[in-house]
Amino acid sequence: MNIAAGGSQAGVGVNLGGGSYFTFGNNRLEARKLSMATLADTLARFVDRPILDMTGVPGNFDFDLEVTPEDYQGMLIRSAIAAGVTLPPQALRAMDNSSGDSLSVALQKAGLKLEPRKAPLEVLVVDSALKSPTEN
Image (cartoon, rainbow, N blue to C red):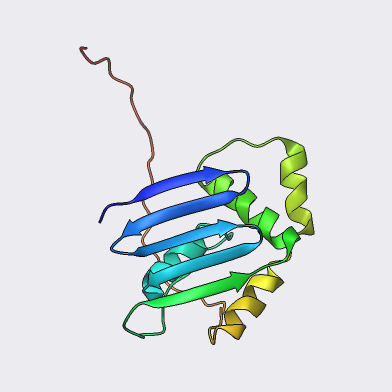
């Protein structure tokens, strides 16, 4: 799979190859030719918990999901945090205005639903790391 990504203040776009891509900008997630598993992985980038595909639905689909400006901003901030970006306190406070409700509404319009569940997840824990000098 060839993944190319680009981002800006206006949002992010990821080309997954084979005509499959998603863009997230201007309060809208546009996805083309995504499997349900890829949609779940994509959404997990922008929320504060893992999302698993439990639909069992095969095939690729097109999605257009609109969220409120507050949820859009919160989702972008969560994505940056998950990517390890250090943000100033005022950016983190902007997440207080984000409820995430508009994402659930957009998914329901597409015939999908997020359900909170407890499920086992594989987690990699790094107890320590040593920095060893390497030759150039």
